[in-house]
Length: 372
Image (cartoon, rainbow, N blue to C red):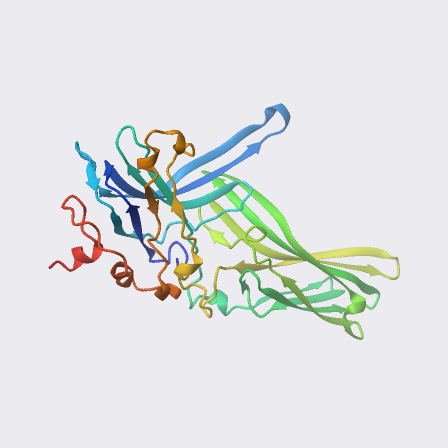
């Protein structure tokens, strides 16, 4: 998704469901569904008065039926069958959010091949990750982040960054300028705390959870000094892992934001009284910037191609095991050397064996758009 929920025009999810069988097999129905779910919940109160406040919602759902159910079963001959699917996702959908303490937003594709009464059904599923990036012309990319203040005409400080937008794995460069206007006030230390705030909403009820991602400190002795002024360059590394740092989000279920909080300590040499000043800068963690190619879809080789087995782990004990074990839903027929980069939608269909000419099967995507 490009842009906020009010800016984004949405995106298209395309894929292919593949069924590979090695001997004649009866199927009642083959279907696929896409679903997005949100889950938020936490404990409120203390002691015996604690209670759980939670909510689960279906955010979006779409179903495809590739082999419709009927009174009679469909007998499919040995072959590789494929069904192309395409779905336009609205730009208002919240992005995927995991690794949160009190909630999550997840999307999955799940396929089910329903068989006869005494045979085990086949099923497989794949997680779909929706990410949201800023629009390439967003002002946030061009804005600098600056905070400056004069405290009681005794201490003056300025913290600045050339940008306020960063990605996982980036380093945040911070330029510090400290000045003691009153010569009786001397700086001691300065610390920067990188914090993440996650706000969970259930209707009008909200809960905010904050966590510290990283802390960097410096002593004034390490500063470059000019009379009563100190200049310093500080750098904070952003973890390159969603377990430790999430992307910024702005939706009605889970909102995530990040701040750099600064703590400055100094003292009055006349009466030896110590003081602490606090301030902060807001930053944005985004999946990708407009200057990178990270928003390109991954190559097929980067995705795990796996075979989905029959539902029952104890299938070998069943008298139908010899028949059932020949069927599986797979997410690809074989690895194709030409797929080192993302191919076009039509080129995928051209490289996969043509499905069985069965009048009960729906036509392929290409056949429907280019009827002969």
